[in-house]
Amino acid sequence: MKEALFKTTIFIFALNFCFPSNINLSSLDFVNVDIVPLEISKNNFGVRVSNVNNQNRFFFQSQNWIAENLYVFGSLSPTLKDNIDIIYNFNIAYKKKNENFFLKSTIFDLGYYYKRFVVDHEQKNKWISFSTIFDIKINQFHFLPSITYIFNDSLSETFLTLDFLKKINKNFIFKFGFKLYELDKYEVLPFMSIKYKI
Image (cartoon, rainbow, N blue to C red; front, side):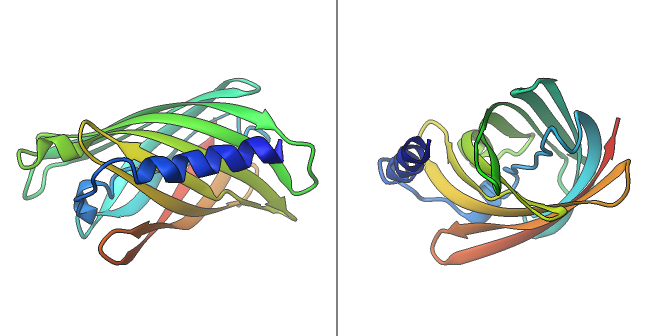
């Protein structure tokens, strides 16, 4: 299992160097990986706050485990401020259980992200993502680091997400973390979300 994970990680980083990269942060900062493990919640919806184009933005999210090893996830973020646009995504993922005390599972997530009604650089507002997410449990916390490779017709980029999850009570879940990019310089974007178990 460790050898397969290592090969997957190397493959994702290698893909990053196969395509030209001329990306500014605002063209990819709306791509988010934000999942809840099955043992915490089978179905949930919530709100995420993260920085998009140097402004705090709310995302309405829903995740549903349709089997023990398969989930679907989606989010929507409309805005009617200065510039009207709508961000949405749809993800589907497969979970592989691990026989490890800390590393509970590895999740392979495939997603489609789109920022609509943005007229400049249209091709940079559609992304397909492939993420490898590691579910590590330490006491009552879940640490969900992930490596995400995103691409479209002409561009690609890789980023790392450090994601922490804690149950507040039997119904509510709190998450916070950071996305780390290496573009012209290192960029760090914080985020947080609250989810309600259905």
